[in-house]
Structure formats: C-alpha cells, structure tokens
Image (tube, rainbow, N blue to C red):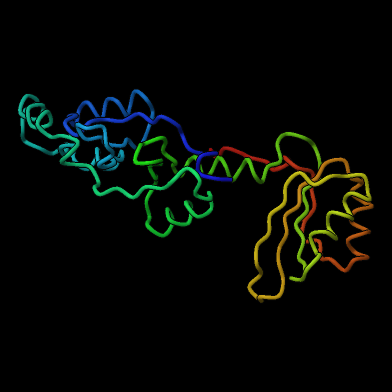
Length: 224
C-alpha cells in the first residue's frame, strides 16, 4: 500500500491569518485533529494540531475578563501557532515508510504533496485503519493461525500449499522476526480450510502452532 491509498484527499485547510477561535471552532465542527495552513498564494506553509490549539488557549485560572480574553484570542493567528516548516510526503511513498517516519519524529500526521500542491493528509488514524484492513481479512469467517517457523526460502509457499490442499485460501498474512534471528512468527488468516487437517499437516511439516482460533472471537467487556 502507498500513502495515497490511506490518505484523506482534499483536506480541510486554514490560511495564515485565520484566528485561533476560528481554528478551534473549525476543528471541533469538522471533528479533525490537524489542519494544514496555507499562505496567501495557496502554498502549504505549516500545520496546526489540536494540541497547538489547547496550548494557546488561556488558563482557567486567568484573571482576565471574558472580553479581554476574546480580544487577545482574536489577535492570535495560525501563522503564530503553526508548526513550520512542515514535514511532508508524496502520494507514492510506501505506507510503512511514512509510518516509520511518524514514529521516529513523534508526529501525528503528514501532509501529502504532489508537484508542490497539497493533495491530502495522512494521520495516525489512517495508518491504524490501514493496519486493521490489511490484517483483518474482512468479515469472512475462517481461522487465524499464529506460527513459529525457521527463516528460510520457501516457508510461505509451504504454508500456502498446506492451507490450499486442505480446502482453504489465505486472505491475510504477516510476519515478525523472532528475537533469536533464525525464526519468524507468521500470522495467517484463511477461509474454508479444515482446521484439524491443517493442524495435522503443520505438525507433519514440523511447524510450531502458537495459536489457532476462529477469527473475530475475541471478547470485549466494559469494566464497572
């Protein structure tokens, strides 16, 4: 997947002279947490987060009157509270690379620019949604296997053959390197296979099954 597959296109923006109250109202009404800031020529020049808005709001302990506060806030503009320069990415950036940058820089969003023009924004929520989409395999019933396998050529083909030969088809797969450097944990989601037959075939192939269960069977509760 690429950034363009997960981003919000044509994001809501503000201009550099937008006031803090207007920005706060916009973010509240549109239910957004970040807004790109455009200069008077329509070029991206910064970004504002809901944290920026909160940090620039007056403390409840202030001794200023409501009228004094409103006057001060109306003078505070996007240009004064935005983060600038702003880190951006391109639509064809691989999604995992963009996610890595967010983690390393400890930021929550990347405006997406093509040929100098703002075309989208990708946020931590978009990455989380893409992660769920890639690993969930949709709502189709089936099995979820977690396996521990040696790192060598052909192991994924072996897994695919075992599932296919027992009436199933892989709908999602992900891997994680084990700490020992010689094994991988493999998450496989499939539909249609005979669970007992797959378990037997995996054992015969000397593949460790760490967990197997029907998909979407995890329970959730609200604590009192």
